[in-house]
Image (tube, rainbow, N blue to C red; front, top):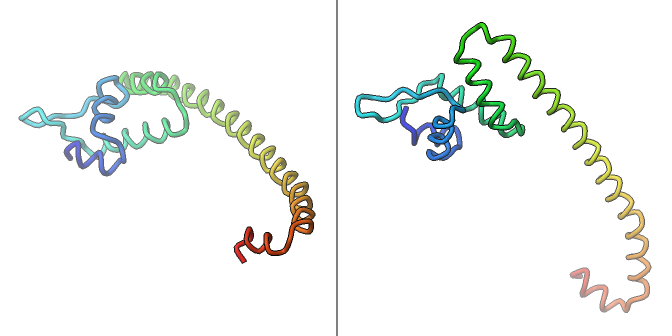
Length: 138
């Protein structure tokens, strides 16, 4: 599969794919006889994995380390697992913090609505009805 096809399939630009390969974020891609990248399904799975991990906020350096360990072979399986556990724990903590922030935002919005709706209703009572119709679009 050529880089344009992989770019379309994975939703990453060709420049991003080349960059990921250059820095070791994805293993080296095979080349055809003319030196043009020829991606395999396995390459695409790596790209999707990296894309997913980046979307979750994992640092490039951690992912490069993971790929490097993977390329060293099965003897690094425990180190890879530990690296993933560490990142999962960080992500779980971040999700918890974001859930707390969301709850606070929801509370603040609710309080705003509880306080502002009565005030707006009082203001409407004080304004001439012609003005209210114009503002409400009636």
